[in-house]
Image (cartoon, rainbow, N blue to C red; front, top):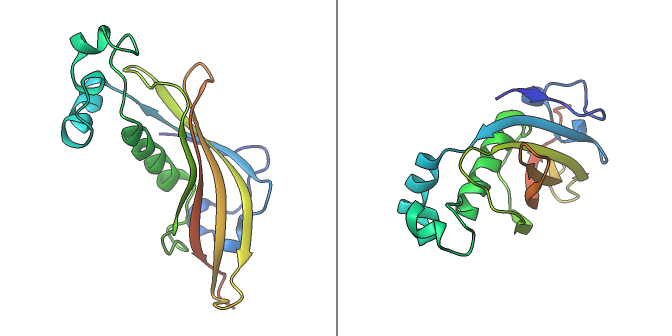
Length: 162
């Protein structure tokens, strides 16, 4: 998985970033996750065993005309790209949730997904000034540029030590 920061990305490497280093409006494009039939089936057999996720023959006759990844598998792929290329391991204190989670197009075997990010909010906590909230719009696009997933991810990050 390669990293390709967007035109508005900061000069501070993501591994070294604190809350203040994420500026509103900053965008980025990161990584690539290849989707395989084996991974789709293995994930779905364990977590989402609907026929269009686990049985290629049945899926061919189903509503999507073939095997597709579980939306939760797609979300897990997003999270892998997000932590590998965007979220600071130095500053991350977890997150309170995700808003507006949507699967907008089916993800199929052979697809290659890229993470797109946009910082929506980066603000220091008034009650705990050593940390703050980062809100990021995330999207996954496939190799044809189709948006297949989007959400707003909330993270709590440390502020830069003084």
